[in-house]
Amino acid sequence: MRKDLPQRELRTYPGADGRTVTSPPVPRDVAEVLARHAEPIQARLLQVRDLIYALAGETDGVGPLTETLKWGEPAYLTEASGSGTTIRLGVAKSAPERCAVFFNCRTTLVETFRIHFADDFTFEGNRALLIPAIGDLPREPLALCLRAALTYHHDQRVCTWTGSTSS
Image (tube, rainbow, N blue to C red; front, side, top):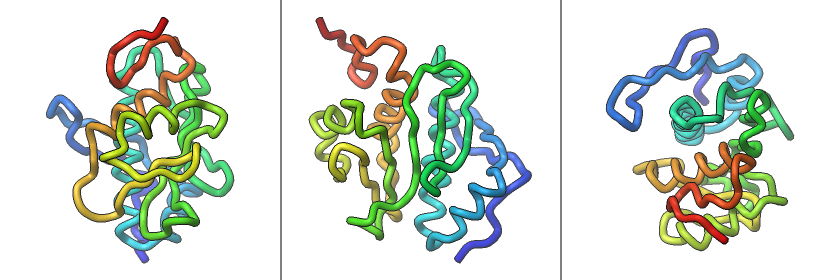
């Protein structure tokens, strides 16, 4: 298992527009939880974390994120703006070889993702989308899902992944 997760250093990665983006250091408690996973799971969860921070930084109204542990898993909250719902990262019991991105089961997010992204992800109930730990990250569809969660409370009449509005 990987023990060298960055705890006090900034992480850099290519942003959606090709510029270098920086995410904050991984907090010690989050790093300890991630270190319990096999290397491919750790690496993929860190990729998803970086994407969450990139999207939060480029999406109007989201603001800074709070990174903490909820139910023993890394969680990302929009506490400052109240714009979105919690996103958690981990592994689903039903698919321990895949990474899970968990959303509040009381939202309509996963139900909507299932309609729009059935070819991109598998799902666990109404609470998680599952992504492979290895291979290409389905970055574009995942970014749309994450942005929808980060802005869930902004204006639920606007479908953030298609740009359409509902009546």
